[in-house]
Image (cartoon, rainbow over all chains, first blue to last red; front, side, top):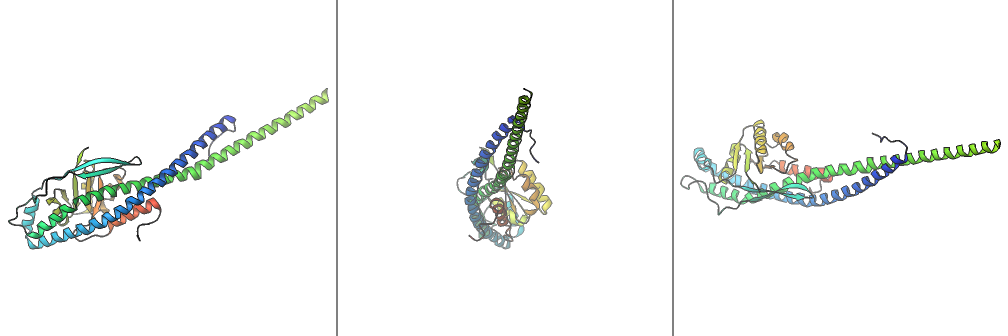
Length: 208
Length: 107
């Protein structure tokens, strides 16, 4: 959509002001984008490392659980696990990365880990699997935090980049074109005026 | 601030173990059910919801709905049959979205 404007001095000065604002905004957006990308790359690397670690360890814990299931009967397993353990609670905070709210999670540490079942009917494999899972909980929380932050940053970077591009390739060129256009029209009017004055002067001189 | 809860959504065999460490477990049998459960949990102030990779694609709708919010974090985890690389793909998609190309693949 092209800009709508009338060729007046008022409009010209308004457009010039808007152009300055657009240029300043563009510069700031660009800085924001660069900083976001810088932080994002660090986070994404961390995210990848954490995920690899988590997938490996969780896989091991689950493997242990599969073994435990094989050793015990289905009902015994159900019986041992259906009783709810003390629910973990997580401290939910928000932290800002360049004013983007991202989660900050900390596990409320409890005094030691307790098996939620008796040892009489359960095998050692189950203990091992549960223990392993309890150990990777902090890792899983950290992964959740980092992964959410990464995805929010990715969204924000995309948005900021669109804004930068819109300003750089659409808004600012439009302002430039409009300003140029108005200046040309004003100059043309000025020339028209001058020649009219010269003509009138000539006619007056002839009459006298 | 507020104390949040964690939940796991997945098939019974994979998620039963999480019960022993005090994470809430919701076992589901199909993607539709997983999506509904996730949506309900996401609205009621959970901090983190882990979804097994088998059901993660089915929950796409809810995941996108809550992408713009800081909470909950919806995180794919491998299930009992091992990882399918869905979590890694999500990371790669993020990187591509932000930087324009995948710069982490060979590092």
